[in-house]
Image (cartoon, rainbow, N blue to C red; front, top):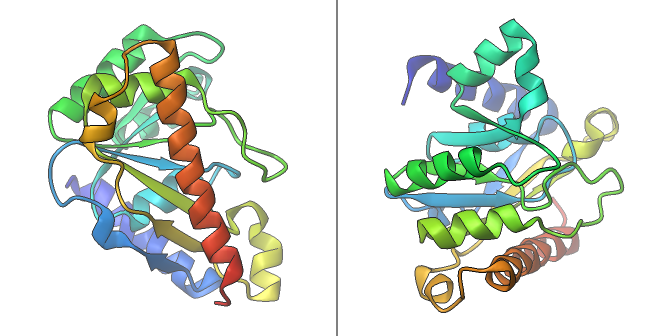
Length: 207
C-alpha cells in the first residue's frame, strides 16, 4: 500500500471514529488478495474516501472526468488510484482499464448507480458495472454506507456512520450470464438487490 494512501486512510478513520463513531461490519467478506469489486450505494461526496478508509484493501476508483479539470485536485485523484471516466457515454477506455486492474489482482470500488442518489433511494444500476464484472470475472462484494448523506445532523444527533460488507457474489454466477446488455443488466440488478438487503439489515438494528 502506498504511504500517502495509508496515511490518508488512518486520518479518515480517526475522523470517522471521533465525530461519527463509525462501525464497520463484515470486513471478513472482502478477499485478502486477488481481483475484487466493492459495489456500494452512493449518496454523498464523502462515500469514496470513507469506503476507501475502512476497506481492508487498497482500493482503485472511477471518478467523473470533470473532477480532473482542476490541476491540484486532479493530481490528488491520480495519486489516490483514481481513473477518469466520461459521464453520459460508454467510456470503453476507462472500462478497459478497470478490467485490467481487476485482472492484475487489484480491488476496485464501483457505484452501480453511476451517480449520487439525492433522495437516498436506489437508482437503476448502469450497464458499466455489469460489463466490468463480467469481463473481469472477479467476485463482487456488495457494500452499504449508512448516514454519510447527513453528516451534520448525524454529528449533532450522534448517529453513527455504518459501513457493512456483504457476502461476495461469486464467479460461478458471473460465468452463467451472457456478456451482453441483458447480462450486464442482470448482474447490476443482483448487486443492488444485495446492497438493499444490507440496507434493510442496518435499518432494523440499533447502533
